[in-house]
Length: 388
Ligand SMILES: *Cc1c(COP(=O)(O)O)cnc(C)c1O
Image (cartoon, rainbow, N blue to C red; front, side):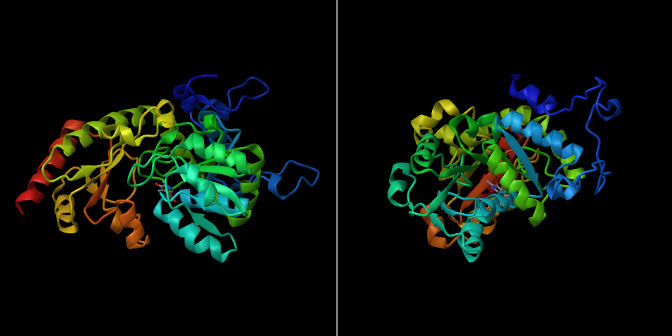
């Protein structure tokens, strides 16, 4: 099998049986801006076999799905209209009681604690990061184990081999949101995760111009999720598919650059008198479980730093000139947010504080600018926050 960088560019391109180049010889997969396709079948082949863009079976869907499956080393992949569409379709399709890590993206946290229980899908949240202790917290009806590879915004990394072992021991379906790590830094399929989800809005597309989600995994499970998504309706449209396929080609280059820049920036911030702490795992290697160290190619472009209180954090955000105050992550532009005001607003204050998500915490998504300019920008903003 070719290497990741090559698969990002070539995997999934169709081969025509007559040896001709696909898509009239176009090098790049064209945008098939069509809702439906000519039906050449004579027999009734069933609803999901009709070619229709909502059913995620147009030519672009097939290319992007095969590319995603190849690069993540899963059997099948499916695109969705957002990361949350992928997560909700997955958990609804699995349909059983969910046990989640306590480090969850805000939208996912609300989904599993408020929305799914109303649909008779109960969810339990772990009270600890000690995976061995989860044995006692699982409910007899638990069917699904749900974790994130590197958590938002604290960069917590769990003992993921232990998570997969626990799932095997109890016959659970192991699901991971791998958005923060990206397939460049971590490949959950190699550990045995049954399903891997990404907000493709972030690193996979990587240009801050698409909302998209993906889920990859075991053949039978992806077929089940596809069948439900066909009726829920959250398929990805042709223009977004075009941008996602284009963005994927540079994923490895972008993420490796961001891995290095984020560590360099975090290291420089840690020495500033206005900064109480940073979460970058590269600066706290003891927080990375031993079992995970050989499995991570890097820890990505995300980290947070704490300046103590809300007023100081707001002064820093206001003084930054290159970094933009905006939610989201994984694009070329460096972005900063206060998680208490964005991704984690709906989480109860006590739960937030227990995770170290306080009012002075600023999350950084390191972009593709030169790191020297980023260091200068953050340093002047922190200096301003000290004098005012
Ligand atoms: C952004 C994000 C999501 C949700 O993705 P959308 O594309 O915004 O729906 C889910 N999980 C993580 C870790 C995220 O960062």
